[in-house]
Image 1 (cartoon, rainbow, N blue to C red):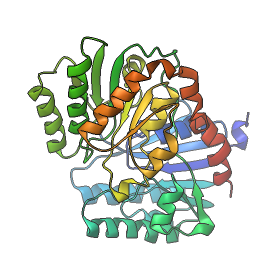
Image 2 (tube, helix red, strand yellow; image 1 turned 45 degrees about the vertical axis):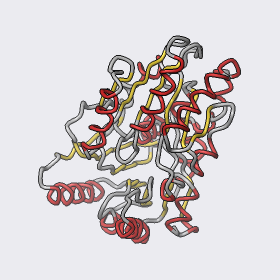
Image 3 (cartoon, rainbow, N blue to C red; image 1 turned 180 degrees about the horizontal axis):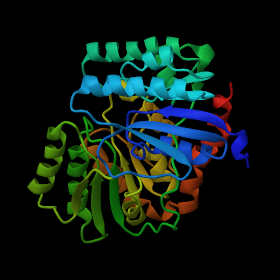
Length: 360
């Protein structure tokens, strides 16, 4: 173990509140023996999650967005000049290039997790262009897939692949004697109501043959997305079988993963989703869940006959995926499912990938 006096100093700047982006929480958990970590985030008003030996610094969530963002940036710069950091690790957000310009640190890293997922071509062009522009002001760039790096045309000489991962939220052995579905994640533009429609068709056929339930956890900034989910549940009179829970943090979802047997990873089949692996695939699989995922490039790379089924982004195909799983329940094995993506455990990612990147 590294002695406290030998620790390097790391500043992580992330506008999302600590604990509500699982990756960064587990980076901290697995880096704290090697680094003295300050984590600057915006207080979104959610329940605060603590992590021992991590100094979490909260910036107030001003109603005025411009004032909030400029204040957050200014505070990050002040922190970097007040304490000599070995590494300043910045999660991409609007105007993050100002941190690259003005922060003090021996090594400055920009972490890019997503391309634009907007349906508007101009908005996608501008957002993706700002990602590329911001890279000019950082010594290293990390991104979750090589496909994202290629789409954004990131500079190859300083871009590093830092994959998404997960921790095992449930280590009890799964018995696949029921069909209990779980969706966790954003609801924005995901059309989760189509999965409910597919589940309803499956339910009507098999409700007398197997225990059935579908839990949906997440939120959208566009209330219309949540409204469609609630309306679809009510229209089919399945309020006791399909339950919409709203927002939960990544620690609260454990009880739902313990009860589930099937994880749902449903994104529209559009080109800009093709390069974007959904985070929850890793949590589902490492916790022993059979996973249904839509047919995208990155999903096909992760989902096999061992750990799940690929489907198209419509209700009929989702129902067919459920039927395929039900017909082959005897072939799924808890240990084989978990082992299929074991390299994506957060501990392994930090040790084998992130730590070498943080070296100057």
